[in-house]
Length: 117
Image (cartoon, rainbow, N blue to C red; front, side, top):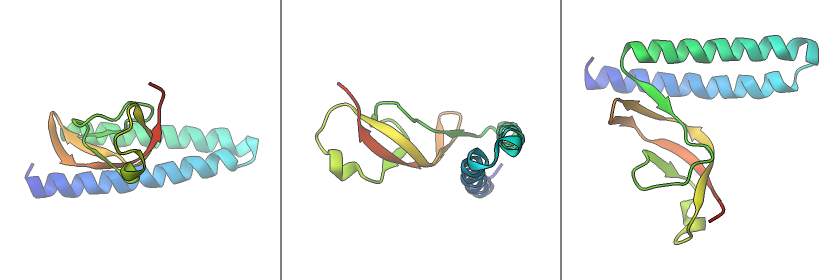
């Protein structure tokens, strides 16, 4: 696959991932009789997304709860709040990173939080 096609497929996957996260939030707020079915549909769709990406050697990477390290393919949108502080973790993912093996296709965006040391 060309680098351009890989970038476009990665961007499409990130957009789909974000749509799935919104759908999951709405599903969790739905009445109980509908919530379980909607959440199952979201899990199924997430699995299909992973399967399609794997067919092209791509994957989405999120890092919730992990200590932020320089080698992570992410940018913390609020990094300035924690400059010089140890034990900063990824609180939530805004956009996952897209990776192809050990190569970064696109960098993810996250929200950082103080972790414990």
